[in-house]
Image (tube, rainbow, N blue to C red; front, side, top):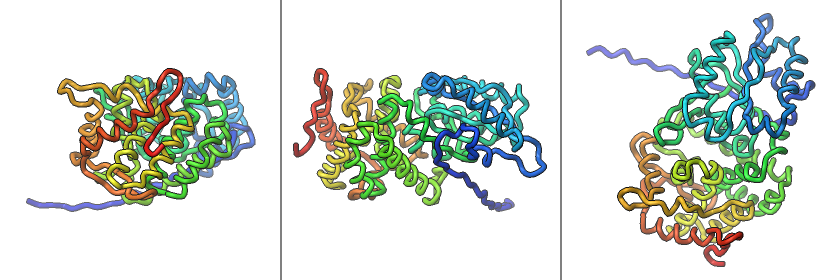
Amino acid sequence: MQVLPQHFTVDYRFDVVFTRDVFAPDNQVLADLLAPPAGGRPSRALVYLDQGVLAGDPGLPRRIHTWFAAHQGAGVRLAAEPGAVPGGEAAKDSLALVERVARDASQHGLCRHSWILIIGGGAVLDAVGLAASLVHRGIRQVRLPTTTLAQADAGLGVKNAVNALGQKNLLGTFTPPRAVVNDGRFLDQLDDRAWRAGVAEAVKVAAIRDAGFARELAALAPRLAAREGAAMERAVRRCAELHLAHITGAGDPFEQGTSRPLDFGHWSAHRLEMLSNQRLGHGEAVAIGVALDLLYAALGGRIAEADAQALIGCLHTCGFRLWDEALDLAGADGRRAVLGGLEQFREHLGGELTLAMPDGLGRSRDVNGIDETQFERALAQLRRWRPQGSSLVASPLGR
C-alpha cells in the first residue's frame, strides 16, 4: 500500500456589519462589499426577498432598484428583478426553493464571481443560502437578516440547510457567507412574535457564555417587552458577538467534533418544532427548550436556582409561552415523543450524544445523556408556566 498524505488549509473571512437603511442611496456598505476589483467586470447580483418582509415593506423593491441605479458607476448590477420567496419554515420544507434559485442563476448567467443577496428571516437565509452554496459549487452570498433571531444568531454562522424526511436541517452545507449585514431598519416592522424571538437565543448564549450579559438581559426584559429599540439593539449585538466568538474562535467552525455548545436547549427545541408541525417558531421552541434545560440543570446543581429562575423570568416577561401541549405527546413506544430529539441530535452530531449544560452561570460543560427521571421533574416544574384561560401560570420554583 502506498499513502500520499495531503494537508491544506483554507482561510475564510466574513464581516458582520451593523448599519441602518442599507438601501438608502448614500449608504456605501453594499457598494464596498460587492464592488469588483479595479478594471474587473461589473458584479452581477440576484436578490431574494422574504415575502413577510415584502408584506411589511412594499416599497423595498423600489429602494433596491434605486440603490443599484445609484451605484452602477461602482460596477454593481442587478441581474434580474428582486424575487419574492416564502418565509418561515415553508421555505425549508422541500428542495423547491433551492431548485428555483438554481434555475434563476442558470437563466441569468450567474457565475461563481456573481452574488446572491438574501433578505429575510433565518429560514429564508438557510434555504437560499443552501442554493447559493450548491450552484457552480458556490456563488458568493451576502445575508441581510431581517429578524431579531436572524440578526442575533441564525444569519451569522457558516451553515445552510433545509428540512427533509421529518428532520430539521437534514440536508445542508457549511458555507460561510462573504458578509452579513444587520440593518436595524428591518427590525422596526416586526410583529411582536418575531420581535421577541431573538431574545430566546440571547438568553441561551448568555446562560452558557456570559454571566454579566445574563444578568443584563434579566434587567432589560421589561424594556424588551415594551419594544424599546435601543434595548433590542444591545441584546442583538451582544448575542451576535458571543456567537461569532465561538464560531470563529473555538477551533471547530464546521462542527467536525461532537460538541455543539451553542445548541444549549436545542435538542428539544428542534424536536418540538417538528412535533408541532412548525406551529411553534424556532425562537418559541428555543425558549421552551432553554427553560426546560435550565430547570434540569438547576435540579442537578449545575446552576443556581435563582439564576435559572431569573433567565426563565426574562423569557416569560418578554412574552414567551413556556409550555406547549407538544411536550405531552407520546411515541408509539409510549415514551415522550420529545425525547426522540435526543436520538436525532446524536445522529446530527455524528454518532455520540453531547449536550451543553450550564456549569454555573455563564459557563458550560458537556454531558452525554439525560436522566429521564430528572427530566420528568424539570418538565413538571415547567408545566407550572402552562397557559390557563387567557393568562399564564407564573409560579416557578421559589415563588
